[in-house]
Length: 444
Ligand SMILES: [Zn+2]
Image (cartoon, rainbow, N blue to C red; front, side, top):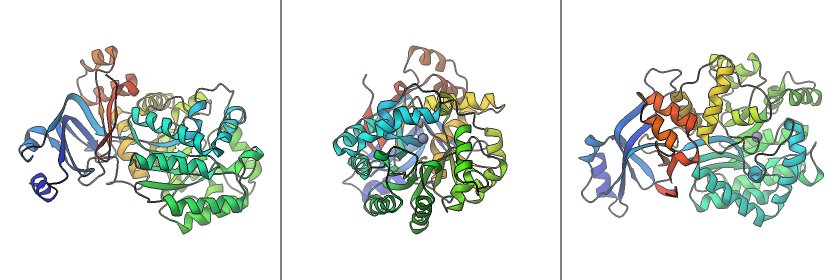
């Protein structure tokens, strides 16, 4: 009935329907027995860029108005688009750079690469490639670090808006402990940040994140101003790095001797709140974890990066005991893949190393609804609830000979998703849709 009435109201904008296995989450599988909706022969119905309904094909077919063409993806799996909650677009061209640890890696590769983003043309070209790559991997929303240059943010949002994507991004604020050529000042950084908020936050689907790079590269004055912006614009995002590796934690202790812990630095400056996303969070203690939940802050865990840089292993057991809001980040270019499937693969192994077990259903939840909840965007992205933005992907269970062979023998949804997480990558993403429009189709 819902479908028919909508058809009548919006005769000029047709309904689209997609037949496939359809899966989305309604709760965290770690907390609720009933956490997902799964339709083995399902259908997703979309109108005007929004989800009308997801359900069983046989039931929904009868409700479709005459003339609605059903796209046939039988044998494939449709899920909400992946959400990557931590990634650096300027680091696209330096992914897979060798260095013994975070600090030498930053100095040798990251800072010289980021320098080039004072050039708007260069920023635009990299943003274009970066977004192509996200979409090829099925990522429809990401929380993105730009560089210290406002031009890099302009270029990113311009590219994202041109494709009508739901993206979060911000200018890096950084006024000390970095090369002179990448430094703003406390005052200038805050001014540029505020101008970008006014121009881009909630401009179409774009959302702004206040982005002090990490505590060591911001002065007290800069962190103070970042906190004031976070208070003045409460529905913007905050994103930064926290407790990534042991050397960095020791450095923060020497720079901020009055703070109880690394995370406490951010708390003192008012940067812990809803819509604040802290990447890594490996070297936290239980007081830090309690503060994460008290302040409604969220964690982006980045396993490919943590293993690549030797930063440490995220403690899933402690995180779950404290009920932390978790999601997955690729952290390109410290991370080694744009693919959220490959990120799940490494997250699973990190959990095992710490004595925890991460079911595939949980991993797919973290990469969709879990991330949306962490970002206070439940009902907007990350699920097929009625009225949600129609960002979704079509996963090919036979993308490679090995994947085809393995998925043909899986006996349950959990086994199927697990095989996808272990064996899948960009090749598994057949098509990507944003607000109901196809934005990527894999070459056949
Ligand atoms: Zn990072």
